[in-house]
Length: 345
Ligand SMILES: NC(=O)c1ccc[n+]([C@@H]2O[C@H](COP(=O)([O-])OP(=O)(O)OC[C@H]3O[C@@H](n4cnc5c(N)ncnc54)[C@H](O)[C@@H]3O)[C@@H](O)[C@H]2O)c1
Picture 1 (cartoon, protein in one colour):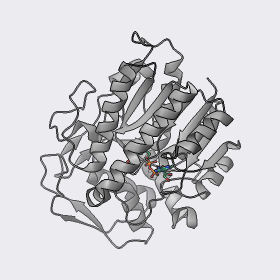
Picture 2 (picture 1 turned 45 degrees about the horizontal axis):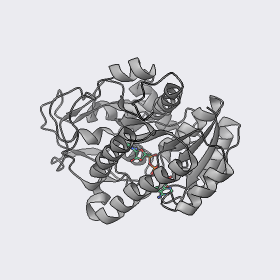
Picture 3 (picture 1 turned 30 degrees about the vertical axis):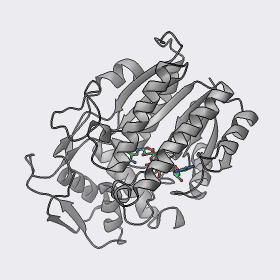
């Protein structure tokens, strides 16, 4: 297997994954419309990897663009990152989320079918487990019960992929990410959210770098060791390597169904939970300064504890996350402190 189509490859996780793919010897074609990224991340990939790749500016919902890519390149597998991902925004703009996230996947699967491309790695999320209070989150848990349109699009896409792979030769590995954080250790690329960050760690680094005044910690009265929410933070470079492991899995003799199809869902996390206050302490240490924060009321829809069961990733993919919370904080801070305004610095 050699040439990989990476949709959303200019984005946060996609760009780090392309670096790992190029390092592992794959050729890459990126398709992105820059709805939440810029071409500066593409320059960073070239600089960090010292390698080149093909890039197509376009929308994954555009079947003509897709057909042209599959005609021009002999694609062996697709990694599908492209999608809208802001939970809060998805509540305000559900139509945009269902349209972008579902239509892109359907059109991509149709184009793959036409071109005879069978291998598909999908960016799913721990959010598909819904509001369960049993942890660690195990892939055998029922999914659904999602609390916002973003999560529901991930859940619906998993259902679609499962149904289609059951009756065709489509081979799917869906990766359920826990909380991706951190940046490339070079400091040349990292998370560059447009507008107000949705996630904790970019918010922390933006406060530390002086772009924002204060962090609000949502809820200090959860039933956890320090009252704040516990999450499973995974370094984005570890996460990126998990995608290389998933591609290798396709070549390792999958147990295909009678149609030649395959579906599996695998968690990518560290299996360890850190509280919000743990993360604040790690970032304060990395930056060598105190963070301005305030504990405020709980936010609707947040569960107290969420971390991954990681046995399946280890057994099926040979994947174990290696980087620590300290690595995550140091690498994020290196990126943010040298690029206070992200790629536009
Ligand atoms: N970052 C997280 O916390 C997290 C957690 C779980 C799952 N995920 C999923 O992982 C994937 C990647 O996330 P990310 O954090 O890198 O997000 P991101 O926004 O940085 O990257 C997504 C990329 O897809 C592109 N894109 C979006 N819609 C497109 C379309 N219709 N056509 C072409 N390009 C399009 C964007 O321009 C962007 O470059 C997403 O599917 C996201 O839902 C992310």
